[in-house]
Length: 410
Image (cartoon, rainbow, N blue to C red):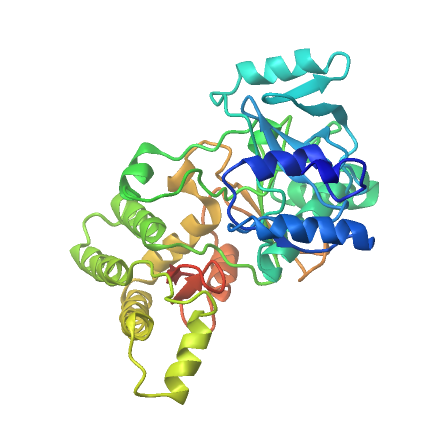
């Protein structure tokens, strides 16, 4: 690794050296440097690795957790505040990473005191570099996230947009005064999501480490939480555990006297549990590719094909049960969709619970509609019902080719 010294490569040689020493097994090179010499160095590193970590170019950043507080590790070993400015850049430098015998930060004047104050509010003391490049979310999720950041930027920095947004809020009876700051409800912004105890009990057995918020935008100085949907956004994408919590919570809080609804819920949960999660036998396989193989070779039979057959059978059962709920107990279905949009039973009064639903055009900041999530209304019900998938409410989902597959709700 000494040969790395003196070269300009995507990350400083000390950072690469630290990864080299760790238990990383495979490294995948992407966005290689233009210089042939640098490409050769990186490809030599690749020989010794087995687990996938992608080293991107100098425009990308890696997450860095120091004493439980999240920062951004820049390509120059600079440590930045984990938040972009309105130009999409991390420019709030707090210090530089110094690899000695352990990970340390050489703080800029006054920054260590600020950091220590944040540590006092955090229950976590972990210090680590999160892999240099995290696999990107699928394009629809990425588009939604990008749009979310742009909407926040417009609310904060575009007077015309902000004025129009506040006028829409006033139409819901929400009057906002002063120069409020919109931001995302992240740990790095000192927000902590916490599910209700009953919800946690309904999800017992899940491997989820941190809940998914219904709130996408929050106003720092006011108790106002907003869920942002871009185009026809999904209300949720729930696995077996989350689906159990959603359906059961609504039933317990509003329909506990209706035994037939509970019977249908139990059928759905039993079917989803029977499917479970399945990792394909080969890394090149996905649900689509396995189905194509089965179509081209009807005699093909292995663990993957048997799981796909089970998945399709149980999806049909669950979709049939959902149709039964819509036909016989439409109000229950609408309450389920309201829970998916608001997180009322999931979060209670926690900041993860959204009390406003903001709907924009697809891949646009143009506001189409705004709804209060304080309670159900006829207009809101209509939007939520329209948001249901046009084909199957229960279908397959995976983390990508070669990764685990499971059944999802919505």
